[in-house]
Length: 439
Image (cartoon, rainbow, N blue to C red; front, top):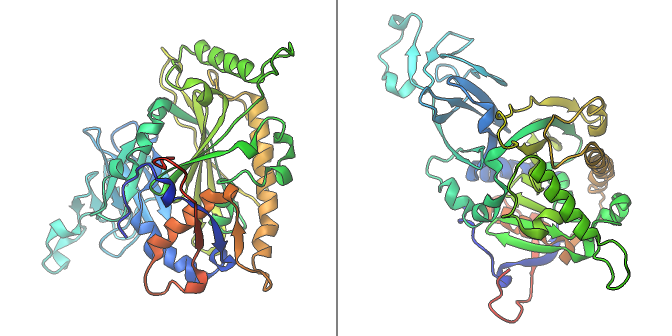
């Protein structure tokens, strides 16, 4: 499917709620449709530009059975290729590294950084070959905000078209000036969509994160949409009652966050009061969520486990803008952990914030770690319970409208033979308000 470019949605296009079949979260047949029709049809976040600062630097990105290697060229450009030798299909590289050539470990065919065939050992033993057809197969690669995206379809729309409207919305955060200072990859025992849903609503906060209720105003959430992408804003703090003489929470928060940015000589004037105080949580379809702060963000990448439809991999990245006048920070290396043995919070034992981090204090990191571990603990019985034979279609409220919007978009990707009607999401459109209906 060719996904439409992002643009602000009208109210008549918004799904207010709906009904979600539980089998979508554990059916191998549904997962097979995702592998066939979703992942090849969307731009996917592969890495950060700063991970590849020098000529020959490379890193791999895997999604189900597909693997892509992204490599920095001698002229500074980025190129991406299917991570497979065209001789016998051997995977060329894993992880990240630096190379002058890619050399297959099986029969030692070698390739230039631009993908061209470099050498075939004992070339005379092969039948006539058009060597131009035996270089590495190229993959679309484009960048935005310091992030590197790949697309498996060579005819796909541009990344800029995919993000249009939303990219303008996000430009105020200066992601290209950020470095990732903490990375974790955690394997978890539930479907990737089960986990993703928890990051698209705050209806669950009263049950799972009661410690956040005094600050996070969940009932006042607002939602915005750009094509397949979305945003949720949750107000933080309370203004003082007029004449009470008490401190104004929001004014104190605003002053604190501006002072932290000033300490790093960082200009945050373009963000405005709400973006400095409130919780802005964005979603890039299909599998990227991030919370923005004055000078940083938390980013989450949800990936299906190719071995088990009821397992997943979650990448957790914390990013921060470089302080003015200092050397650009290097990207942190990722640490992989088994969520059945080690919690996210436990993985941070002994972790200290790098100098110059302004959006995250150690107390805030601890709060995030506790909240994430609460989510992961709760999602285990959710995944088990989804198998109950007595479940009706799962109802989604207006507070869960981003989940509804996301599933309606997913079904557009999966449309065609094999998408059983019993597995399709049934959405309830929102009644358009008076006026032009813009959200």
